[in-house]
Image (cartoon, rainbow, N blue to C red; front, side, top):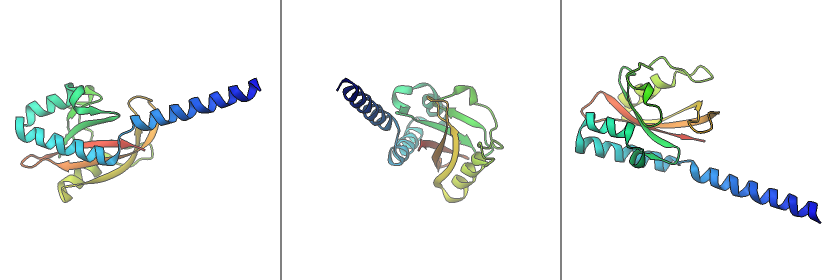
Length: 153
């Protein structure tokens, strides 16, 4: 009897943990909403202040495992809500674990179509494990760059 109770408690704990983890993952709709909120913030305060806010104001611009990042059309990181050490670096040639040039694809997609999604694999900022990720990118009006938010799947 004690064995079954222990097994049941372990199963219950794993279900609760999985549920909590799922709640920590942002959704595609939340990613799109965060990008649109970021674009509204840019319009209100300007690029320079907004990019600073996206990097430093975690309470406003980091939701669950979603964070804002901004590239210019050359691939220079202008803001990053999870890793400020990337700011100023040209990441245009960066590839994922499978060799996909996802940064270039994200930049080109925003520049040519205005917005869209790109799938690739990337390290999760919390778990540090390589996971599948989809990033929504949207061109910044009147500026040669885009705002992005990725969803870990």
